[in-house]
Amino acid sequence: MTMSLQLAALPNLSIQHLDRLPDCPAIYFAIDDQGRVLYVGRAKNLANRWRGKGHHRTEQLKRIHRRHPVTLAWLDCADCCERLKELEDQYIEEFQPLLNGTEVPAVKVIPAETVLQQSLEKIAKYVVIFGVVEPPDAEYPTVILKYLGWQRETTNLRRIFNGTNRKPSSLYWTEFVRRNPGAWWRSRCNGVALQLGPWIELPGMPMPVTEAIARDQNLHPLAGIPLLTLTSEVLEQLLRSDPNLVKSYPNLKPYQADPIPLVWKDFAMKRGRDQ
Image (cartoon, rainbow, N blue to C red; front, side, top):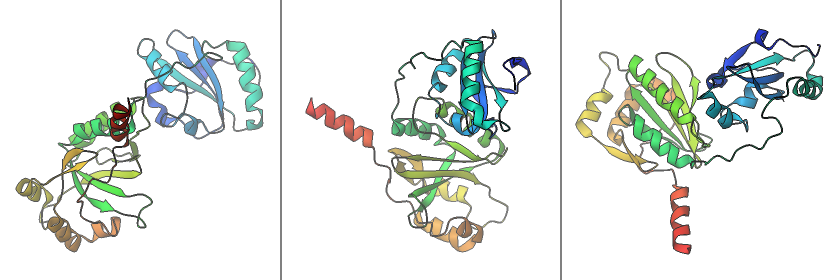
């Protein structure tokens, strides 16, 4: 592998599509639309390095992207991964990237529970709390949510979660089943997991959820945000009549109390009293 490198010939993705990066050792190059190399780095696993908000330059590059679109190009180093540090130093010397060696601007971080509340407010009209699975049947207390619908609902939810994931916060909605329509997402906040998937009612299904929701209008808070919730009676009838639901969520229990502690709210209130 030589020092001379044609960056335009490398595979690349927009900085907005980091979830599509491959699993490979690589040298990566952040480049703006004027061909300026903004940053050069190395990764033993490129996808993991940029997953979620894992990279310390993610927010800075996304802010630049609003003015000058940024792409991330990479050089696959599977055949020379033992030389990653050497190659990184060589390409930093060659391209003199603008951001390497500079301080990372401080970003005002939004508490995870605040971002969760904002996203729940936006998805409230699409989702229903089915119930909760408690440890030891799950690693964390896991709230099971379903969205009613298919094509349009999947598109709207994906748009909402993509916007949520761009915020400077540790909260992240992972689309772990990427399917259109019918995608699945999961997240975690303050020690509680959330899982959201589609619920499709077929003709002749016993106890249609949509009818039960319209009849009961049963609301319970999740992270303090009121959401439609199946009553214990409706959930029990569903579990008796739908073996797939039982198989997917062993020991699914009715949702009765908000399991997510609002840590930041309590901390902020305590600070106010102490000052």
